[in-house]
Length: 172
Image (cartoon, rainbow, N blue to C red; front, side, top):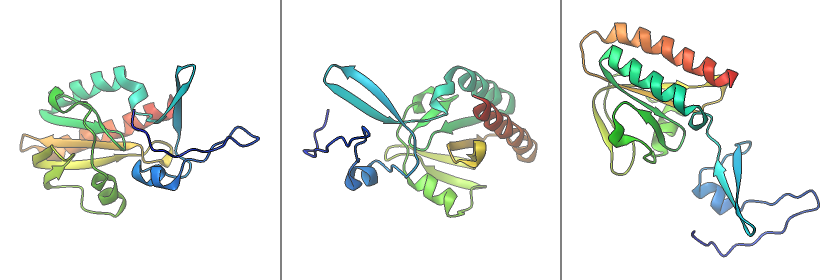
């Protein structure tokens, strides 16, 4: 575990303040959910909560089936890591913050030819990004790497699948 040397007092309501430097470094935003883990009698771990990570079994199976039926590679990310892919070598990599920034800033997310996912991984080919927004909150992305020429038919299936995934995440 990496030490910061920073200490904080617990206030009368049991709250602590996460220092601004740590929030900035970890890309924590106001209102973002954190999971609390008790490691032992003397340590607590805080982790960014990801709605997508909690739905592993269904989404993993669905992504694999969708990729197989559409002859594409599909990547589902939370806001900070690649969570599901039909290509196992890319699972659980930390993604760059550029992806979220580009989508939020309206950068074109269709007909991409390359996408930097992490410092070590760049996807190439015909790519499209779909933002996952259950309850209107951005929770991640559905990235599609096309292999065939029938792209418009596949986009219609992906749009439907994106809606299905968002509804699933809203209900759980």
